[in-house]
Amino acid sequence: MHLNFVRVLLVPGFVLTLLISCRTKKVTANSKPKADGPVVVDVMVASLQKVNNTVQASGTVIASENVDLHPDATGLLTYLNIPEGKFVRAGTVLARVNSADLVAQLEKSRAQLDLAQKNVDRLHKLLEVNGVNASDYDAAVNQVESTRADIDYTQALIDKTVVRAPFDGTIGLRQVSPGAYVTPATVLATLQQLGKLKVDFTIPEEYGNLVHVGNAVDVEIDASSHARQKATIIAIEPQANEATRNLSVRAVLEGGEVNPGAFVKVFIGAEGSGREAIMVPTSTIIPNDITSDVVVIKQGRSQFVDVTTGLRQANNVEITKGLQPGDTVVLTGVLFARPNGPVKIRKVETLQEANRNN
Image 1 (tube, rainbow, N blue to C red):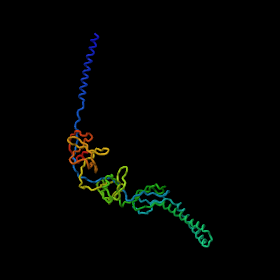
Image 2: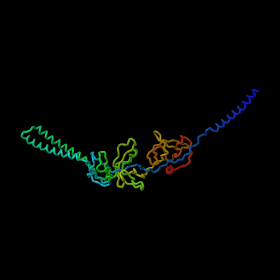
Image 3: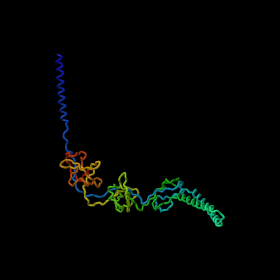
Image 4: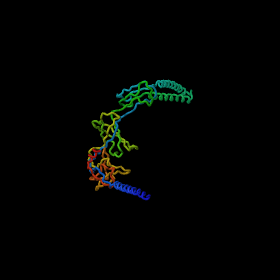
């Protein structure tokens, strides 16, 4: 009886185990991954495009001459002539710092000089009749020269208390009031010469061959009307910035009403030069440590091609080596493409359509 009871327990357990095993095999069989399908991509056919060989750069308008007006002495302002927004001539007295103590010292030195000079005259007459030692006469002459040096020194200190316009220009806003205590670090106002405005801008060093002293560039000084003015390059910084690898360029603006400090766009190069090149959207470039790749389709499979880039525009980049007209370039799905992997073309676009969609 005990043996039959054991058989009754074992048979249902065996059946349950068999059912679980079969279900597990069925689930495993259904979960087996299928073979990878083709990657769906949009493409464009590489072709020669007209290259607009114009590089756009950001620039800043600066005055022909620009200076912050500082006093060269410390003290109270006893005179202030800052005609805000007005034109002043070079040499105009704009401010004076209290110099009463220096003026008094100057008068004292002049009195001492007068006395020393009279002493020299008397000793000179005695020296002619051997009535005085030559050393005494030399000491008197030295006293005269020393006093004159003191006068020059004091006069120089007095000159430092006067602030004059260093050049013809327009005064900015006044920063101090009469009676203020100022130091050489105090800014009284700004003075700017607006006759010939300059434009400072930077470009990547790879475009250094486009800028030369004497060349003309177009400057967009009004973003709303897109009005442009000509500017002539007058200087190029010979050393590229080590942090940005950019070249600094300065040009003189020919006309145009714009304020110093304004942001402008600078266009370098000649439009419509007629040069043709293969252009692709920037998003198709896969940068590597050393080279750059572009995915192309050959016989229904994706291939990674090393390319050399050239001129860069806002949305496109020139391919100087690696692509030929007629090559099928992958636009979308670049990140999912695998070397020699199958692909399925969903749509063929032109370069202009690709730029609009991006």
